[in-house]
Amino acid sequence: MSMLMQSFERPYHGADRPARVSEARKAQLKRVALGALTVLTMGSVLTALIALRTAIYVWHLHA
Image: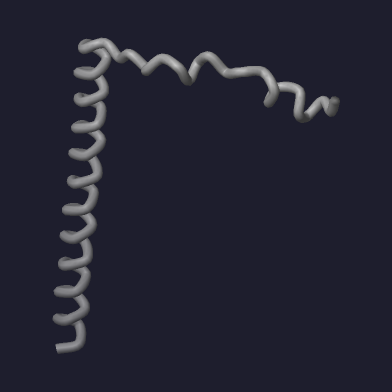
């Protein structure tokens, strides 16, 4: 038997039971996800404002 195929013949018992996540952990993950979404949104707004300011500057430069 090959060393590479040896672990595939044994059954994996970890996949039989569903993953259990506590309510406190769910709440923590929600807070982290909401914080990440807030940071990404703020970054997008900041990027749009910089692009708008640059476009106005270039427009006045050529006028």
